[in-house]
Structure formats: structure tokens, C-alpha cells
Length: 102
Image (cartoon, rainbow, N blue to C red):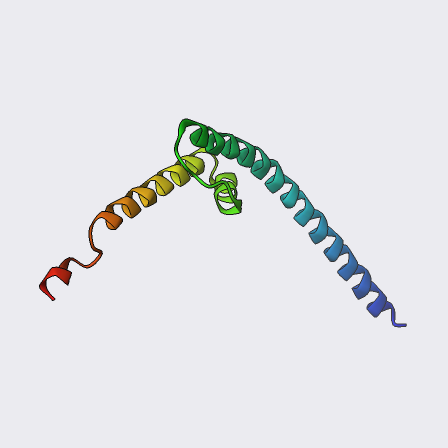
């Protein structure tokens, strides 16, 4: 084998290992950020369900709470409250206001 080929292979291995270490460090930092946010968001969502605000606890709500933290959990509660309020309004009246003229 050519010494230049061996040197290029060693350089590629060093670059690959350094990138692997960097990705693992970032992944660990990300997990250390997401896990507490997910736990706090889950506590807030369960508290909302205990109080009487019906918010489904699924992967979407917990994931959004994990990414956005406490404001994300509060935003999910507000979104589900407004969606349930909108459903209550639309079932009382028709979705098409011009329907009475047809």
C-alpha cells in the first residue's frame, strides 16, 4: 500500500471519530434539556386534567412540552381549550351562514 493512502485513511478515521464524539456530546446535552422539560410539561398537563381542563396526554403534547418547556405546556392547554370551545360553538349553529338563503 502507498503511504499516502494509509495517511489518508488515518485522517479519515480521526475526522470520523471526532465527529462522532461531537454528535454524542450534543445529543447528551439535548437529552439533558429535553427530559426535565418533558417531566415538567407532563406535570402541568396532568394538573390541567385534574383541575378539569381536558387535554389529551399523548406524544404530541408531551413532545411539544419537551421542546418548548413550561410555555409549550401552557400553549397546548390554551390550544385544546380553544379547539373544544370552537367545537361547542359550531355544533350549536351551522358551519355555513349562507345555508338559510339556499
